[in-house]
Amino acid sequence: MQRMGMMIGVQPEMLAKYRELHAAVWPEILDLISRCNIRNYTIFLREPENLLFGTWEYHGTDFAADMARMAADEKNQEWWAFTIPCQKPLETRAEGEWWAMMEEVFHHD
Image (cartoon, rainbow, N blue to C red; front, top):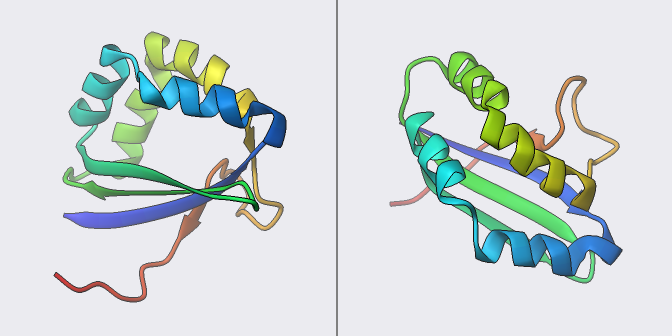
């Protein structure tokens, strides 16, 4: 199991829409997340900066393949058509990232 974290901004004018979408995530998306070996997925919001922090546990053996499967999923592409316009990527993210991945530096069970 690998714990992962990521950050992204949210467009201030889209904050209400982002909250609305995540208050009722489509069942197909929740199932896809599980099938892609992601567990304990949480997104936190920090206002007034409008930053999102996502964290989850990855329980698979091939993260790249699972993420490719998620990206290729037709229903997920439809979901992203609603959520991506709400997001504002960090300027400091690595090339190829949308959400900026974070390094775990401490954990306590």
